[in-house]
View 1 (cartoon, rainbow, N blue to C red):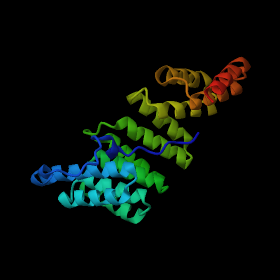
View 2: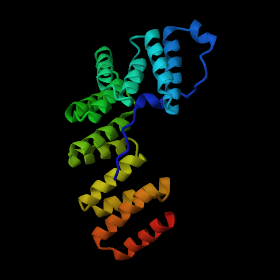
View 3: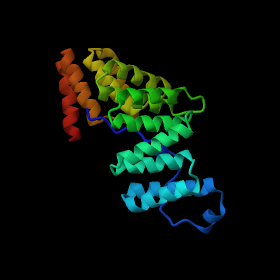
View 4: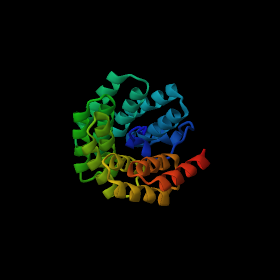
Length: 236
């Protein structure tokens, strides 16, 4: 199964807009002006307008140089365009200035995992989870699980997926990936129940049907295997 890219938590907050900043932005506080530019930059980034995205992220950082969201936004931009050293520098600065910020820890961990620094990434994910004011715990557990899969540590990945689902039982990526690992471990009952729960919540998908086909094939249930194959054919 192709793993989905790790979530960037800074993109989860606030609505998107690409309108020109109004005059009240100039009159507001530095943090508010920075936040407005971040939202503009994210909107441009989603549209693929990288020049405007960078311009707004840099202005956001100028307005409030120590604001962690401005630092993370520009670092994410640099990562997107392949300027890894610049991204690394900004993430490192953000961590030094905000060592107890869960978003900084999670996003830097995401970056390090993409750079294949798996142990460092795992440490940062776990630090994020421990922060008392950090509420995206299931996401960080899921990120840690995916990073563990990339490093080849399937046992640790399974534990992290389980923890993610303990905090948020309906996370689709964790449900599917945990079911896949359970099938590999011949834990068929657990995987079957997990995939049926997925169908109840999200409907029948190709990814879940493919896992059910593999499950019933390995379990020797030809009737169920054929049933799910027919369902898959109807989705094509």
